[in-house]
Image (cartoon, rainbow, N blue to C red; front, side, top):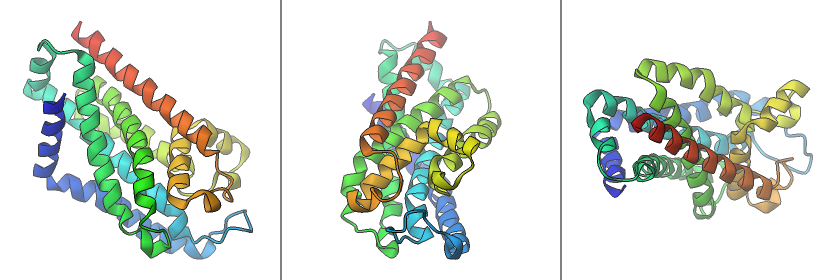
Length: 251
């Protein structure tokens, strides 16, 4: 497990374009969309004064987690083509250890890049002190997303197919999590989609961690307990599913 985790770290550091892609694209989203929408953005709560750059900040953090987590699992497709995956699967180690090593590698990378972006927090009025408190939620959300990416990548034979699934499923999943616009202003059918999206609760938990109780309580968010609980259940479910699909293939 430790060897696989270390391998993910080394591979990431050697592929610097991944750093630019996973961190640069969300940063551009935040700057361009935040600047363009900022003047017309209003929250329903009259007691909360928040600019769009500040509102969109946690959503951008989650987008970085999504990009880094998902892209880290593309290595499964590459490992299969190179024969490395077959070699690992015949080794006398539990399948759960193999899965956990891959997932912890992707989670570590995602949290590292999320923290790098959060260094910009003071520019939108968010204190540096929010970063340590948010680390746990960032790790939980990243772990769930990495496991989801693992499941998708395990079934894929090409990186092109993986990117197609990402554009069809994962980007809409992020867009419909309340990251770009508040769920309270959405039409009824769209609000229902947002409410059943597990990433909605992951993002809400990240908002609670970053904003603090006083500000987050005024934003019509799901409670922190509910958000944390759903995120934990989602992470456990996709982790168990990742182990299951690995065992089925190798049996």
